[in-house]
Image (cartoon, rainbow, N blue to C red):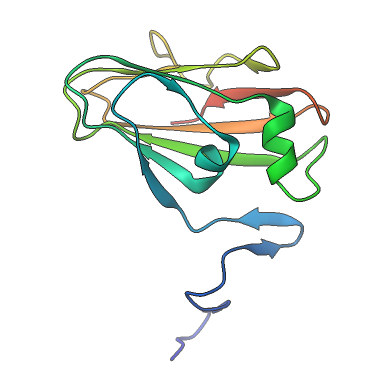
Amino acid sequence: STKDYQAVLGQESILETILRGVLVNTRSKIGKNSSTTLTAAECLAGVIVSTSPTPVTLTLPSASDLIAVLNGGAQGTTFELIVDNSGGSNSITIAPSASITAITSPFTITNPMIVTTAQKVGCFKFYFTSATTAVVARIW
């Protein structure tokens, strides 16, 4: 059923929705409790969760690898990745690959690419400047 001013799109079996040219993702959780390089599919799942008692560094895949799984992604394509450290007892560092540049966060934080146990959760937005390069910034 629907309510006034509510739009309902799809059902649970739909894996991808594009709204006005923007991919709207249902987020899947991927557990990562040790340092590793993330795959493009893991990034696009939308949520990385860690419960690690030791520091974790997650290296991003190349911009080309991400574009390849974005179904036609190119310059101007964006997506977000959430890092959930609410169950961890140490920090998670997001390490950009050579083709992804970390840019200054829009708010003041000591190191915007680290999600501490005090912060619990961080959201990172990617913007592709070409089919082979991207920038990433922590947006909250």
